[in-house]
Figure 1 (cartoon, rainbow, N blue to C red):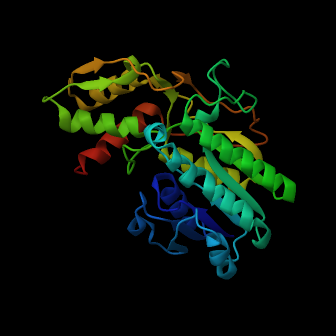
Figure 2 (cartoon, rainbow, N blue to C red; figure 1 turned 90 degrees about the vertical axis):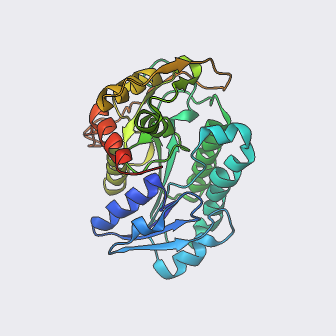
Length: 311
């Protein structure tokens, strides 16, 4: 199988590209390198192309020679904080590349498209956990732009009869992650536990009550890979199954590190749904996948990674 991974040098996209190549697929990773790291991509059956997916005809240029059968889109603005201060960056990096994809789709020999999205598109009112039937009503600009990208893809690909999958992930964390991302709280907290103590205390916004299920990077990759290979179509929610508040996550990191780092709380004015946990309504007979890395195991692996990597 030949495929293109848009955003293929990023935290999730890079790990996904390497995994798919290791499974024997021919992968072209495309990334503008604003946050990607191409040296991590180099391996057999995996090539890298630097390009801005928001520019016209980028996909057409690479598809002419590679003849991919699947396009996986993992690109997009990944930091909710940026969406509040610079909403135009969300449009430029999250929505415009999807528009470019749908513009090029009639010229591409694609069998299917996978769009990786976020649970932040969901409403703040439905009961937990939120499955694929839960209502959408984003509580912040970050969720709004991802929902717009989803809707645009659904409309254009549905119009053209091209099979697609929309994969909503909870915050993804693990080795190699950055603080400027949806799951960046864990990176920030891990770095603080290791380096900040004993000079100052950690301050958590929203009184540390933001509650999410977190997904370890290896599980995120295996979920997307299984959706690809099992040809699961439509909307799919991926869950980490274990959830906690930011203060609970920080407490776990503190215990795992053995450092009694001081912690303080502050209110928050950012529009954020304090509680959101994902689940899927798909039966295992339809989609056979389950996360394997527990939250405590994933947090320990993340701490170990940051111990070995300086700032």
